[in-house]
Length: 118
Length: 424
Image (cartoon, rainbow over all chains, first blue to last red; front, side, top):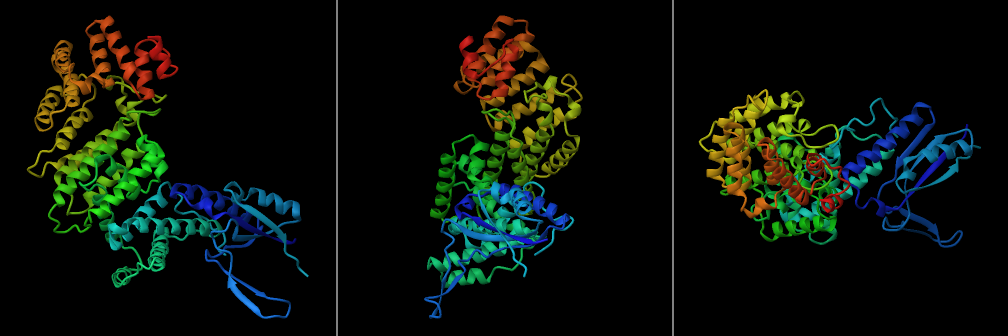
Protein backbone atom coordinates (compact mmCIF):
# COMPACT_ATOMS: atom_id res chain seq x y z
CA UNK A 1 0.00 0.00 0.00
CA UNK A 2 1.38 3.40 -0.92
CA UNK A 3 2.20 6.21 1.48
CA UNK A 4 0.67 9.63 1.14
CA UNK A 5 2.03 12.88 2.45
CA UNK A 6 -0.33 15.43 3.97
CA UNK A 7 1.32 18.84 3.74
CA UNK A 8 -0.42 21.10 6.24
CA UNK A 9 -0.76 24.63 4.95
CA UNK A 10 -1.77 27.16 7.56
CA UNK A 11 -2.43 30.84 7.92
CA UNK A 12 -0.42 32.09 10.90
CA UNK A 13 -2.89 34.85 11.73
CA UNK A 14 -5.44 32.21 12.73
CA UNK A 15 -3.37 31.51 15.81
CA UNK A 16 -2.90 35.10 16.95
CA UNK A 17 -5.55 35.04 19.67
CA UNK A 18 -5.56 31.37 20.58
CA UNK A 19 -6.27 30.77 24.27
CA UNK A 20 -5.00 27.90 26.41
CA UNK A 21 -8.57 26.60 26.61
CA UNK A 22 -8.83 26.61 22.80
CA UNK A 23 -5.52 24.78 22.64
CA UNK A 24 -6.72 21.99 24.87
CA UNK A 25 -9.69 21.44 22.59
CA UNK A 26 -7.62 21.55 19.40
CA UNK A 27 -4.90 19.26 20.71
CA UNK A 28 -7.45 16.77 22.02
CA UNK A 29 -8.99 16.55 18.51
CA UNK A 30 -5.60 15.91 16.91
CA UNK A 31 -4.68 13.30 19.50
CA UNK A 32 -7.96 11.53 18.82
CA UNK A 33 -7.25 11.56 15.07
CA UNK A 34 -3.66 10.40 15.45
CA UNK A 35 -4.60 7.70 17.95
CA UNK A 36 -7.28 6.32 15.64
CA UNK A 37 -4.92 6.21 12.65
CA UNK A 38 -2.08 4.84 14.79
CA UNK A 39 -4.27 2.02 16.11
CA UNK A 40 -5.19 1.09 12.52
CA UNK A 41 -1.49 1.09 11.57
CA UNK A 42 -2.08 3.84 9.01
CA UNK A 43 0.04 6.64 10.47
CA UNK A 44 3.64 6.18 9.45
CA UNK A 45 5.16 9.59 10.18
CA UNK A 46 4.69 13.24 10.77
CA UNK A 47 6.27 16.26 12.35
CA UNK A 48 5.86 19.93 12.90
CA UNK A 49 8.27 22.12 10.97
CA UNK A 50 10.16 24.78 12.91
CA UNK A 51 8.54 28.20 13.08
CA UNK A 52 11.55 29.97 11.58
CA UNK A 53 11.52 31.19 8.00
CA UNK A 54 13.57 28.28 6.63
CA UNK A 55 15.86 28.74 3.63
CA UNK A 56 15.38 28.76 -0.12
CA UNK A 57 18.30 27.32 -2.07
CA UNK A 58 18.14 27.95 -5.76
CA UNK A 59 20.42 28.35 -8.77
CA UNK A 60 19.98 31.62 -10.64
CA UNK A 61 19.91 29.69 -13.88
CA UNK A 62 20.40 26.02 -14.61
CA UNK A 63 24.03 25.34 -13.73
CA UNK A 64 24.46 28.92 -12.49
CA UNK A 65 25.47 30.28 -9.11
CA UNK A 66 23.53 28.79 -6.25
CA UNK A 67 21.83 31.30 -3.97
CA UNK A 68 20.65 30.76 -0.43
CA UNK A 69 18.07 33.08 1.00
CA UNK A 70 15.55 33.16 3.80
CA UNK A 71 12.33 31.36 3.08
CA UNK A 72 8.89 32.88 3.19
CA UNK A 73 8.36 34.74 6.43
CA UNK A 74 5.78 33.44 8.83
CA UNK A 75 3.91 36.68 8.25
CA UNK A 76 2.99 35.50 4.75
CA UNK A 77 -0.49 34.21 4.20
CA UNK A 78 0.30 30.56 3.74
CA UNK A 79 3.10 28.45 5.17
CA UNK A 80 3.59 24.73 5.55
CA UNK A 81 3.53 24.17 9.28
CA UNK A 82 3.99 20.42 9.33
CA UNK A 83 3.25 17.13 7.64
CA UNK A 84 1.87 13.68 8.25
CA UNK A 85 2.55 10.50 6.29
CA UNK A 86 -0.28 8.01 6.11
CA UNK A 87 -0.58 4.61 4.58
CA UNK A 88 -3.64 4.20 2.37
CA UNK A 89 -4.92 1.94 -0.39
CA UNK A 90 -5.48 4.77 -2.83
CA UNK A 91 -6.19 8.49 -3.12
CA UNK A 92 -9.81 7.92 -2.08
CA UNK A 93 -8.80 6.46 1.26
CA UNK A 94 -6.08 9.09 1.75
CA UNK A 95 -8.63 11.82 1.03
CA UNK A 96 -11.02 10.29 3.56
CA UNK A 97 -8.26 10.32 6.17
CA UNK A 98 -7.44 13.95 5.31
CA UNK A 99 -11.07 14.95 5.59
CA UNK A 100 -11.05 13.76 9.19
CA UNK A 101 -7.86 15.69 10.02
CA UNK A 102 -8.66 18.47 12.53
CA UNK A 103 -6.37 20.77 10.57
CA UNK A 104 -9.32 21.52 8.25
CA UNK A 105 -11.69 22.28 11.11
CA UNK A 106 -9.30 24.94 12.36
CA UNK A 107 -8.97 26.81 9.11
CA UNK A 108 -6.03 25.02 7.50
CA UNK A 109 -5.58 23.54 4.03
CA UNK A 110 -4.11 20.15 3.22
CA UNK A 111 -2.04 19.36 0.14
CA UNK A 112 -2.10 15.61 -0.47
CA UNK A 113 0.64 13.86 -2.48
CA UNK A 114 1.35 10.21 -3.08
CA UNK A 115 4.92 9.19 -2.31
CA UNK A 116 6.30 7.31 -5.27
CA UNK A 117 8.09 4.11 -4.49
CA UNK A 118 10.20 2.98 -7.40
CA UNK B 1 7.92 11.05 15.35
CA UNK B 2 6.47 9.90 18.61
CA UNK B 3 3.93 7.15 18.17
CA UNK B 4 0.58 7.66 19.84
CA UNK B 5 0.93 6.04 23.21
CA UNK B 6 -1.60 4.68 25.69
CA UNK B 7 -2.22 8.06 27.24
CA UNK B 8 -1.00 10.58 24.72
CA UNK B 9 -2.79 13.53 26.29
CA UNK B 10 -1.91 13.11 29.91
CA UNK B 11 -2.68 16.72 30.79
CA UNK B 12 -6.07 16.74 29.10
CA UNK B 13 -7.86 17.78 32.25
CA UNK B 14 -9.48 21.19 32.16
CA UNK B 15 -7.44 24.26 32.86
CA UNK B 16 -4.04 22.60 32.92
CA UNK B 17 -2.68 24.67 30.06
CA UNK B 18 -4.38 27.78 31.36
CA UNK B 19 -2.68 27.41 34.70
CA UNK B 20 0.57 26.45 33.00
CA UNK B 21 0.34 29.71 31.09
CA UNK B 22 -0.26 31.78 34.21
CA UNK B 23 2.60 30.07 36.01
CA UNK B 24 4.98 30.80 33.17
CA UNK B 25 3.81 34.43 32.97
CA UNK B 26 4.27 34.74 36.73
CA UNK B 27 7.75 33.26 36.68
CA UNK B 28 8.97 35.37 33.78
CA UNK B 29 7.31 38.59 34.95
CA UNK B 30 8.77 38.14 38.42
CA UNK B 31 12.25 38.08 36.86
CA UNK B 32 11.81 40.60 34.05
CA UNK B 33 9.78 42.96 36.25
CA UNK B 34 6.28 44.40 36.11
CA UNK B 35 7.43 46.93 33.48
CA UNK B 36 8.01 44.07 31.02
CA UNK B 37 4.65 42.42 31.69
CA UNK B 38 3.32 42.96 28.17
CA UNK B 39 6.52 41.68 26.60
CA UNK B 40 6.31 38.59 28.79
CA UNK B 41 2.69 38.01 27.83
CA UNK B 42 3.54 38.34 24.12
CA UNK B 43 6.39 35.88 24.50
CA UNK B 44 4.19 33.39 26.34
CA UNK B 45 1.50 33.72 23.66
CA UNK B 46 4.09 32.93 20.98
CA UNK B 47 5.25 29.94 23.01
CA UNK B 48 1.66 28.73 23.27
CA UNK B 49 1.15 28.94 19.52
CA UNK B 50 4.39 27.05 18.99
CA UNK B 51 3.28 24.43 21.53
CA UNK B 52 -0.11 24.13 19.88
CA UNK B 53 1.46 23.39 16.52
CA UNK B 54 4.03 21.00 17.99
CA UNK B 55 1.60 19.03 20.13
CA UNK B 56 -0.84 18.52 17.33
CA UNK B 57 1.89 16.54 15.53
CA UNK B 58 3.61 14.73 18.36
CA UNK B 59 2.65 13.88 21.90
CA UNK B 60 2.87 16.71 24.40
CA UNK B 61 5.73 16.51 26.87
CA UNK B 62 5.02 15.14 30.32
CA UNK B 63 5.70 18.56 31.83
CA UNK B 64 4.11 21.14 29.52
CA UNK B 65 4.79 23.98 31.96
CA UNK B 66 8.57 23.60 31.75
CA UNK B 67 8.39 23.32 27.98
CA UNK B 68 6.35 26.52 27.76
CA UNK B 69 8.63 28.24 30.24
CA UNK B 70 11.77 27.52 28.21
CA UNK B 71 10.12 28.44 24.91
CA UNK B 72 8.69 31.68 26.32
CA UNK B 73 11.92 32.67 28.03
CA UNK B 74 13.84 32.22 24.79
CA UNK B 75 11.19 34.15 22.92
CA UNK B 76 11.28 37.02 25.44
CA UNK B 77 15.05 37.17 25.07
CA UNK B 78 14.71 37.27 21.29
CA UNK B 79 12.18 40.10 21.47
CA UNK B 80 14.40 42.12 23.80
CA UNK B 81 17.36 41.65 21.45
CA UNK B 82 15.38 42.50 18.36
CA UNK B 83 13.95 45.63 19.88
CA UNK B 84 17.48 46.69 20.87
CA UNK B 85 16.28 47.01 24.40
CA UNK B 86 18.80 44.42 25.33
CA UNK B 87 21.05 45.81 28.04
CA UNK B 88 23.50 44.45 30.52
CA UNK B 89 20.68 44.37 33.01
CA UNK B 90 18.72 42.09 30.72
CA UNK B 91 21.77 39.87 30.34
CA UNK B 92 21.90 39.59 34.06
CA UNK B 93 18.20 38.81 34.25
CA UNK B 94 18.38 36.15 31.60
CA UNK B 95 21.43 34.53 33.12
CA UNK B 96 19.79 34.44 36.53
CA UNK B 97 16.88 32.34 35.31
CA UNK B 98 16.95 28.69 36.07
CA UNK B 99 16.34 26.09 33.39
CA UNK B 100 13.37 24.57 35.13
CA UNK B 101 10.64 25.61 37.45
CA UNK B 102 10.81 24.37 40.98
CA UNK B 103 7.53 24.21 42.84
CA UNK B 104 8.44 26.65 45.67
CA UNK B 105 9.75 29.17 43.14
CA UNK B 106 6.58 28.95 41.07
CA UNK B 107 4.39 29.43 44.10
CA UNK B 108 6.41 32.40 45.22
CA UNK B 109 6.13 33.97 41.77
CA UNK B 110 2.41 33.29 41.58
CA UNK B 111 1.96 35.08 44.91
CA UNK B 112 3.92 38.08 43.63
CA UNK B 113 1.75 38.21 40.53
CA UNK B 114 -1.44 37.99 42.57
CA UNK B 115 -0.37 40.85 44.83
CA UNK B 116 0.74 42.84 41.79
CA UNK B 117 -2.65 42.35 40.07
CA UNK B 118 -4.48 43.32 43.27
CA UNK B 119 -2.25 46.32 43.93
CA UNK B 120 -3.97 49.22 45.75
CA UNK B 121 -2.96 51.67 42.97
CA UNK B 122 -5.49 49.93 40.69
CA UNK B 123 -9.27 50.41 40.85
CA UNK B 124 -11.03 47.35 42.35
CA UNK B 125 -12.73 46.15 39.15
CA UNK B 126 -9.44 46.44 37.24
CA UNK B 127 -7.81 44.27 39.91
CA UNK B 128 -10.39 41.53 39.34
CA UNK B 129 -9.92 41.68 35.57
CA UNK B 130 -6.12 41.70 35.79
CA UNK B 131 -6.01 38.82 38.28
CA UNK B 132 -8.30 36.80 36.00
CA UNK B 133 -5.99 37.59 33.09
CA UNK B 134 -2.57 37.10 34.65
CA UNK B 135 -3.16 34.68 37.51
CA UNK B 136 -6.07 32.66 36.12
CA UNK B 137 -4.87 32.88 32.52
CA UNK B 138 -8.27 33.83 31.09
CA UNK B 139 -8.38 35.56 27.70
CA UNK B 140 -9.93 38.99 27.24
CA UNK B 141 -13.12 37.53 25.68
CA UNK B 142 -13.42 35.09 28.58
CA UNK B 143 -12.97 37.91 31.09
CA UNK B 144 -15.52 40.01 29.25
CA UNK B 145 -18.02 37.15 29.45
CA UNK B 146 -17.26 36.44 33.11
CA UNK B 147 -17.59 40.07 34.17
CA UNK B 148 -20.43 40.84 31.74
CA UNK B 149 -18.68 43.70 30.01
CA UNK B 150 -18.04 44.26 26.32
CA UNK B 151 -14.83 42.75 24.98
CA UNK B 152 -13.19 46.06 23.98
CA UNK B 153 -13.94 47.40 27.45
CA UNK B 154 -12.28 44.38 29.05
CA UNK B 155 -9.21 44.81 26.83
CA UNK B 156 -9.08 48.49 27.65
CA UNK B 157 -9.26 47.81 31.37
CA UNK B 158 -6.36 45.35 31.10
CA UNK B 159 -4.21 47.69 29.02
CA UNK B 160 -4.81 50.60 31.40
CA UNK B 161 -4.10 48.49 34.46
CA UNK B 162 -0.79 47.27 33.04
CA UNK B 163 0.19 50.79 32.05
CA UNK B 164 -0.63 51.98 35.54
CA UNK B 165 1.54 49.27 37.09
CA UNK B 166 4.40 50.25 34.79
CA UNK B 167 4.01 53.97 35.44
CA UNK B 168 3.86 53.48 39.18
CA UNK B 169 6.92 51.19 39.08
CA UNK B 170 5.16 48.66 41.26
CA UNK B 171 7.65 46.57 43.20
CA UNK B 172 7.22 42.83 43.22
CA UNK B 173 9.38 42.12 46.26
CA UNK B 174 7.56 40.39 49.09
CA UNK B 175 9.72 39.70 52.12
CA UNK B 176 10.16 42.79 54.24
CA UNK B 177 7.91 44.91 52.01
CA UNK B 178 6.58 47.68 54.26
CA UNK B 179 3.12 47.75 52.73
CA UNK B 180 2.62 43.98 52.59
CA UNK B 181 -0.31 44.01 54.99
CA UNK B 182 -2.18 46.63 52.98
CA UNK B 183 -1.50 44.71 49.79
CA UNK B 184 -2.87 41.51 51.29
CA UNK B 185 -6.00 43.42 52.34
CA UNK B 186 -6.37 44.73 48.78
CA UNK B 187 -5.98 41.17 47.48
CA UNK B 188 -8.66 39.91 49.87
CA UNK B 189 -11.17 42.55 48.83
CA UNK B 190 -10.41 41.72 45.18
CA UNK B 191 -11.02 38.01 45.73
CA UNK B 192 -14.18 38.79 47.69
CA UNK B 193 -15.45 40.82 44.74
CA UNK B 194 -14.48 38.08 42.29
CA UNK B 195 -16.22 35.39 44.31
CA UNK B 196 -19.38 37.42 44.76
CA UNK B 197 -19.54 38.20 41.07
CA UNK B 198 -19.56 34.45 40.51
CA UNK B 199 -21.78 33.54 43.42
CA UNK B 200 -24.61 35.97 42.88
CA UNK B 201 -24.34 36.86 39.25
CA UNK B 202 -26.06 40.20 39.03
CA UNK B 203 -26.84 40.03 35.34
CA UNK B 204 -27.21 37.60 32.50
CA UNK B 205 -28.73 34.19 32.07
CA UNK B 206 -26.98 32.26 34.79
CA UNK B 207 -27.47 32.76 38.51
CA UNK B 208 -23.96 31.59 39.37
CA UNK B 209 -20.72 31.56 37.42
CA UNK B 210 -18.82 28.89 39.32
CA UNK B 211 -15.60 29.49 37.36
CA UNK B 212 -15.19 32.86 39.11
CA UNK B 213 -15.78 31.26 42.53
CA UNK B 214 -13.32 28.56 41.63
CA UNK B 215 -10.58 31.04 40.69
CA UNK B 216 -11.18 33.16 43.79
CA UNK B 217 -10.75 30.05 45.94
CA UNK B 218 -7.61 29.03 44.09
CA UNK B 219 -6.08 32.50 44.52
CA UNK B 220 -7.02 32.52 48.19
CA UNK B 221 -5.05 29.26 48.36
CA UNK B 222 -2.03 31.05 46.87
CA UNK B 223 -2.15 33.54 49.76
CA UNK B 224 -2.56 30.75 52.30
CA UNK B 225 0.39 28.81 50.90
CA UNK B 226 2.93 31.42 51.92
CA UNK B 227 3.80 32.14 55.55
CA UNK B 228 4.26 35.78 54.51
CA UNK B 229 0.60 36.20 53.66
CA UNK B 230 -1.32 33.44 55.47
CA UNK B 231 -2.91 35.81 57.99
CA UNK B 232 -6.00 34.87 60.06
CA UNK B 233 -8.27 37.05 57.91
CA UNK B 234 -7.11 35.12 54.82
CA UNK B 235 -8.28 31.93 56.52
CA UNK B 236 -11.52 33.72 57.38
CA UNK B 237 -12.11 34.60 53.73
CA UNK B 238 -11.20 31.03 52.78
CA UNK B 239 -13.74 29.72 55.28
CA UNK B 240 -16.40 32.04 53.86
CA UNK B 241 -15.63 30.90 50.29
CA UNK B 242 -15.86 27.22 51.19
CA UNK B 243 -19.11 27.64 53.13
CA UNK B 244 -20.63 29.47 50.17
CA UNK B 245 -19.18 27.08 47.58
CA UNK B 246 -20.66 24.16 49.51
CA UNK B 247 -24.09 25.65 48.86
CA UNK B 248 -23.56 26.43 45.15
CA UNK B 249 -25.45 23.36 43.94
CA UNK B 250 -28.23 23.69 46.46
CA UNK B 251 -29.02 27.27 45.55
CA UNK B 252 -30.71 26.41 42.27
CA UNK B 253 -33.38 24.02 41.16
CA UNK B 254 -32.86 21.72 38.18
CA UNK B 255 -33.59 24.55 35.75
CA UNK B 256 -31.04 26.96 37.22
CA UNK B 257 -33.65 28.99 39.09
CA UNK B 258 -32.86 30.34 42.54
CA UNK B 259 -34.22 28.64 45.64
CA UNK B 260 -34.83 30.35 48.95
CA UNK B 261 -32.90 29.08 51.93
CA UNK B 262 -36.02 27.32 53.22
CA UNK B 263 -36.55 25.53 49.90
CA UNK B 264 -32.96 24.35 49.53
CA UNK B 265 -32.32 20.65 49.90
CA UNK B 266 -29.52 20.65 52.49
CA UNK B 267 -28.43 17.16 51.53
CA UNK B 268 -27.26 18.72 48.24
CA UNK B 269 -24.83 20.94 50.10
CA UNK B 270 -21.25 19.71 49.78
CA UNK B 271 -20.30 18.50 53.25
CA UNK B 272 -16.70 17.89 52.26
CA UNK B 273 -16.36 21.61 51.50
CA UNK B 274 -18.16 22.50 54.72
CA UNK B 275 -15.57 20.49 56.65
CA UNK B 276 -12.75 22.41 54.92
CA UNK B 277 -14.54 25.66 55.74
CA UNK B 278 -14.65 24.80 59.45
CA UNK B 279 -10.89 24.03 59.38
CA UNK B 280 -10.21 27.49 57.98
CA UNK B 281 -12.60 29.11 60.44
CA UNK B 282 -10.65 27.56 63.28
CA UNK B 283 -7.35 28.85 61.90
CA UNK B 284 -8.96 32.27 61.38
CA UNK B 285 -9.51 32.48 65.12
CA UNK B 286 -5.82 32.41 65.99
CA UNK B 287 -5.14 36.13 65.68
CA UNK B 288 -6.34 39.24 67.46
CA UNK B 289 -8.04 40.85 64.48
CA UNK B 290 -11.73 40.52 63.73
CA UNK B 291 -12.34 41.25 60.07
CA UNK B 292 -15.63 41.42 58.20
CA UNK B 293 -14.59 38.11 56.64
CA UNK B 294 -14.51 36.54 60.12
CA UNK B 295 -18.05 37.67 60.79
CA UNK B 296 -19.41 36.69 57.39
CA UNK B 297 -17.79 33.27 57.72
CA UNK B 298 -19.26 32.94 61.20
CA UNK B 299 -22.74 33.70 59.87
CA UNK B 300 -22.28 31.16 57.08
CA UNK B 301 -21.15 28.59 59.64
CA UNK B 302 -24.45 28.82 61.56
CA UNK B 303 -26.30 27.99 58.37
CA UNK B 304 -23.93 25.15 57.56
CA UNK B 305 -24.37 23.68 61.04
CA UNK B 306 -28.17 23.77 61.04
CA UNK B 307 -30.37 20.94 59.79
CA UNK B 308 -33.17 23.31 58.84
CA UNK B 309 -34.13 26.97 58.77
CA UNK B 310 -36.11 26.56 61.98
CA UNK B 311 -33.30 24.96 63.93
CA UNK B 312 -30.77 27.61 62.87
CA UNK B 313 -29.14 29.71 65.59
CA UNK B 314 -30.75 32.97 64.44
CA UNK B 315 -29.88 34.81 67.65
CA UNK B 316 -26.14 34.31 67.05
CA UNK B 317 -26.62 35.30 63.41
CA UNK B 318 -28.36 38.55 64.35
CA UNK B 319 -25.56 39.33 66.81
CA UNK B 320 -22.90 38.62 64.18
CA UNK B 321 -24.74 41.00 61.83
CA UNK B 322 -24.73 43.64 64.58
CA UNK B 323 -20.93 43.34 64.84
CA UNK B 324 -20.63 43.38 61.07
CA UNK B 325 -22.62 46.61 60.83
CA UNK B 326 -20.37 48.17 63.47
CA UNK B 327 -17.25 47.41 61.36
CA UNK B 328 -18.82 47.94 57.97
CA UNK B 329 -22.12 49.82 57.95
CA UNK B 330 -23.81 48.77 54.71
CA UNK B 331 -27.48 48.79 53.68
CA UNK B 332 -27.15 45.31 52.15
CA UNK B 333 -25.90 43.92 55.45
CA UNK B 334 -28.83 45.62 57.21
CA UNK B 335 -31.16 43.96 54.71
CA UNK B 336 -29.67 40.54 55.47
CA UNK B 337 -29.92 41.29 59.18
CA UNK B 338 -33.63 42.00 58.74
CA UNK B 339 -34.09 38.50 57.28
CA UNK B 340 -32.44 37.05 60.38
CA UNK B 341 -34.67 39.26 62.56
CA UNK B 342 -37.73 37.76 60.85
CA UNK B 343 -36.60 34.32 61.95
CA UNK B 344 -35.70 35.37 65.48
CA UNK B 345 -38.35 37.96 66.34
CA UNK B 346 -41.06 37.41 63.75
CA UNK B 347 -42.16 38.92 60.46
CA UNK B 348 -43.57 42.10 62.01
CA UNK B 349 -40.23 43.08 63.54
CA UNK B 350 -38.45 42.41 60.24
CA UNK B 351 -40.93 44.50 58.22
CA UNK B 352 -40.39 47.35 60.67
CA UNK B 353 -36.63 47.08 60.03
CA UNK B 354 -37.22 47.19 56.28
CA UNK B 355 -39.42 50.26 56.61
CA UNK B 356 -36.49 52.06 58.18
CA UNK B 357 -34.31 51.05 55.22
CA UNK B 358 -36.82 51.94 52.49
CA UNK B 359 -35.46 55.42 51.92
CA UNK B 360 -31.86 54.25 51.36
CA UNK B 361 -31.28 54.98 47.65
CA UNK B 362 -29.03 51.98 46.98
CA UNK B 363 -31.71 49.64 48.37
CA UNK B 364 -34.59 51.29 46.54
CA UNK B 365 -33.11 50.07 43.24
CA UNK B 366 -31.87 46.73 44.62
CA UNK B 367 -34.24 43.98 43.41
CA UNK B 368 -33.51 41.72 46.39
CA UNK B 369 -34.72 44.40 48.79
CA UNK B 370 -38.14 44.18 47.17
CA UNK B 371 -38.18 40.38 46.82
CA UNK B 372 -37.23 40.09 50.50
CA UNK B 373 -40.01 42.48 51.41
CA UNK B 374 -42.43 40.61 49.16
CA UNK B 375 -41.64 37.30 50.84
CA UNK B 376 -42.05 38.78 54.33
CA UNK B 377 -45.35 40.35 53.32
CA UNK B 378 -46.63 36.98 52.09
CA UNK B 379 -45.78 35.47 55.44
CA UNK B 380 -47.63 38.34 57.13
CA UNK B 381 -50.68 37.57 54.99
CA UNK B 382 -50.49 40.97 53.27
CA UNK B 383 -50.84 39.58 49.73
CA UNK B 384 -51.75 42.72 47.82
CA UNK B 385 -48.72 44.60 49.14
CA UNK B 386 -46.56 41.55 48.50
CA UNK B 387 -47.67 41.49 44.88
CA UNK B 388 -46.76 45.13 44.50
CA UNK B 389 -43.31 44.48 46.00
CA UNK B 390 -42.61 41.59 43.62
CA UNK B 391 -43.92 43.59 40.67
CA UNK B 392 -41.51 46.35 41.58
CA UNK B 393 -38.63 43.86 41.91
CA UNK B 394 -39.43 42.62 38.42
CA UNK B 395 -38.76 46.05 36.96
CA UNK B 396 -35.31 46.05 38.58
CA UNK B 397 -34.02 42.47 38.23
CA UNK B 398 -31.26 42.11 35.64
CA UNK B 399 -30.54 38.41 35.99
CA UNK B 400 -32.81 36.04 34.09
CA UNK B 401 -33.06 33.38 36.84
CA UNK B 402 -34.00 36.06 39.40
CA UNK B 403 -36.62 37.21 36.90
CA UNK B 404 -38.12 33.76 36.72
CA UNK B 405 -38.08 33.53 40.53
CA UNK B 406 -40.02 36.76 40.91
CA UNK B 407 -42.36 36.02 38.03
CA UNK B 408 -43.20 32.63 39.52
CA UNK B 409 -44.31 34.40 42.68
CA UNK B 410 -46.56 36.60 40.61
CA UNK B 411 -47.96 33.63 38.73
CA UNK B 412 -46.47 34.85 35.45
CA UNK B 413 -44.59 33.09 32.69
CA UNK B 414 -41.81 35.49 31.77
CA UNK B 415 -40.84 35.71 28.12
CA UNK B 416 -38.31 38.44 28.59
CA UNK B 417 -37.71 41.20 31.03
CA UNK B 418 -39.39 43.82 28.89
CA UNK B 419 -42.50 41.91 27.94
CA UNK B 420 -43.11 40.97 31.55
CA UNK B 421 -42.59 44.50 32.72
CA UNK B 422 -44.99 45.72 30.05
CA UNK B 423 -47.74 43.36 31.12
CA UNK B 424 -47.72 44.63 34.68
